[in-house]
Image (cartoon, rainbow, N blue to C red; front, side, top):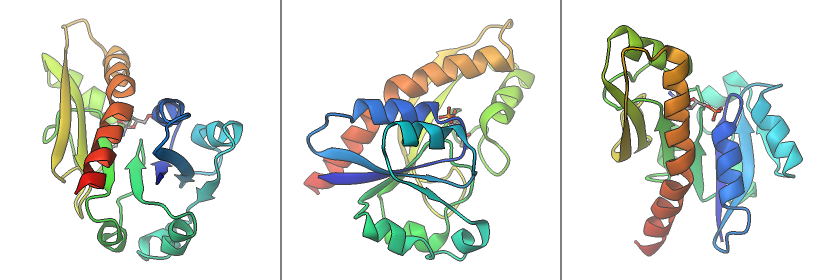
Length: 192
Ligand code: GAR
């Protein structure tokens, strides 16, 4: 059984889809929800689903390996960032080489980097009058929104689109694709 930790900072709509997708999976289990924000919606979801949670404290987290014992204790094999807004420290990237993936709500390398998350991304896309946007699922390395791209999907935009409607279109893509890509990546890693 491969054990996954979902790292999330917000509402957790992606986390909810992922949890649902793997609910009866024979080889993959969501074993932990990790969050940096007490009170975040994702914690309610985890509680309702009976999934253990871990709340991160900022200084400890950025020290690098402070939370590795917690991940080891739960035998976490793989980390999925689903709307997690802190940069992953190098020590954690090194402890999980090729085993941390992130979803970004735009077509990287466009609209990535520090400060580019959630609604800020969609506002920038609309301001630039883009005719399309999309999602990027990628491996996590030491830099923000930088690691090797695993999957992208596009969606067309019209001049009437607002940051809110762009967010809806992008969220639909995220919910449709993210769980399946996680499954494919873990299966592939298992075969290596
Ligand atoms: C998602 O759209 C995800 O792509 C984005 O945060 C949202 C979380 O929504 N992540 C980033 O912007 C990372 N740079 P959710 O809490 O409903 O899953």
